[in-house]
Length: 345
Image (cartoon, rainbow, N blue to C red; front, side, top):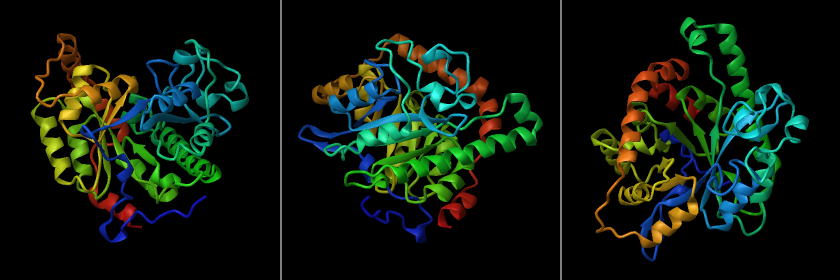
């Protein structure tokens, strides 16, 4: 493996810079990068090697994937903590060994196996794929609402141990698989949903850039006080005055961090994302997005469907209803001084 380039400036208390995630200059103007959500999900079963390879073949710049641990501590690519939706089995990943999981096939055709993070990295280590990068959405396990409300320490300790194992084994996998040239810390963006897991990034992945993944504008805004922590926001929550204000704040610190949007599938919202001058669009259909990038006209008047506006309204209502539960499980606020301390050390 090529020697890692020191990307972090300890004097600022920041994380490594993720310049590889910034928007691309093209003959048609600057365009947000195309990031394949769980691979090329529109054409293949999500989070499978076919979806990842399909995304690369159509020209996606990056791939987003989700990570969980099996019972025998293998890091696998799966959005869900259970096998039900994608594999039709009423079992939790954490209760199953890899030898069993690798025999399963997706419900969706063509029936595909679940890959490990190792399998994805070995594919991306192929010479010629050095420019393809990864967003790792690290899926820690969360307590039930009741356990969180009652502060069940035994449950939380178990979940904290799981998170520690997951981060440690992600780091071990990255160290095990040797890239062809460009080091992984210039191709991998580590995604965290809560500030409480940033110490694990500092402990196990100190040379890797970090992005906050989420939908809370207030929570994201606090991360802007920490140098170089990137932002990966649910696109629907950036529509409106408060979302515009966050975008303006990020752009003021543009040299320091990137902003990505998920999950953008409608053509009108793809164009809206380009107009907002974000750095990357995470989409189920990267081929469609790349075509939109070519045809985009900055003078075009954008019109969004009634269904999409309804979906945005419903998501905001859901956030109000479930926001307390989410904050209770993930933590309420970002302790900026504590985050700086972890990153500096």
